[in-house]
Image 1 (tube, one colour):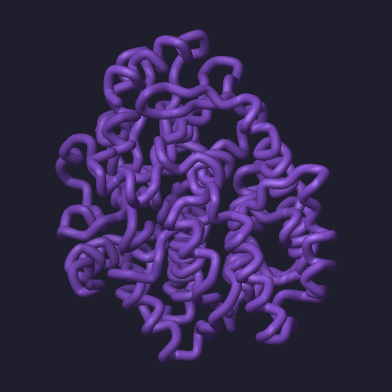
Image 2 (spheres, rainbow, N blue to C red; image 1 turned 30 degrees about the horizontal axis):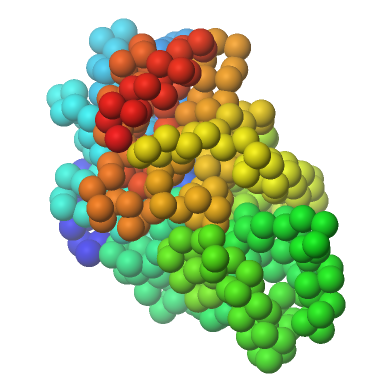
Length: 433
C-alpha cells in the first residue's frame, strides 16, 4: 500500500531539498505532533533550517503568524491540516506569495489551489480515516529525504492517536519498524504501562463506567491483580482482560471490545518506550497548550518527561470526570446524540470515549462554548460508517447552515460555529441525519 504514496512523497521531498528555509505548521494533537517531529528530525539531518508551530485549527489567523516568520523563497509545509482548507491556502498564496506543500490525510472539500504539492492518501485511493494518518504520510516524505527509518515509531504513535489500526499503509510502516528493530510488538491489554490501578482509574481506552458500587480498587482486589501492567504474569493479565471485557460489553461498541486486547508497541528509540503512553502524553500536552513540550519529547529530549507525565494524568482525570456525568447530561435525537462539555481541550477525547464505551449506536456531537465560537467534536464507529454515516460531510453541511465551518473524516470530524447558534446547529443536524 505504501508504494501508492511514493510518487507524491518524492515530489514533496524534492521541493524541500531545494529550499534554504522551511516553515512547518502542524496540528496540536498526537498525530499532528508526531508528524511535525518526523519532518523536523528529517530537516535537521538535511541541515535545512526550519521553524515549527503547532495549532489547534487552521484559519485566517495564520496570515499574521506567517507574515512575521516567512519571506519570499521559503517553503511553507503543512502537516495534518490543509487538504480541506483550500480557501485558506489560496489566501496565503495570494497575500504572501510563498510556495506551499501539504502532508495530510483528511479528505479534500474542494480541489486544492494550483501549484501546491500534496501527499494525501485520498488522492491515490487510500482511506485516510483508517489506513494511514498524517504521521504515516510524513514518514514517507522523510524516507525520501534520507535514512530516517528510526522515525517509524513516531508514525505508529501518530496512527494510534487517531484511533487507527495497523492496516494498509500503517501495516507497511509497522513491518518496516519491526524489521529494523525500531519497534517491538507484544500482545496483551492495550492500556498505558504503569501501576495498573492508577492506569485503569485514568483510562478512557477502555473506559470503565463506575460509581460507588463499582470501584477500581475493589475490582482489582477481587481479581487478585496488582503491580505494573508490563510486569503482570500471563495468567493475571488474562484474568484482568476477561474481567474488563465483562464490565464493558453491555454498553461498548464492537470496535472497543475488539480493541481492548491486541498488539502493544514498544518504541526502542523514543524517550517514552510505551507507544500508548507516549501518544497520550503528547496529546494531552498539545491540548493543554504545552505544544513545545510535546514536540520536545518527540525530538527525544528527556528533560520534560516528568512535567509532561503530570499533564497527562491531569488531562485524563478531567476526561474521566466528565464521562462520569454523561448519563445525566446527554441529549437524545432521532439520528444522533449531543452533549455540552465544560472543558474545551478534552472534547475530542470525551466524544471518542462516549461513542466507543457508552452510546455507540448513534453519532455523538460534543459542543463546547467559548467566547466567540462553539467548538464541535463529532465521533462515530466503523459500523456507523459502514451504514452510510459520513461525519465529515454532516459537519460541513450543518456547520455551514449556521455560519460555521466543519470537516474531517467519515468516522471523526470537527468544526466551529458562532456562539448562540447551537440550537440552530442541532436543528441542522436533525435535517442531515
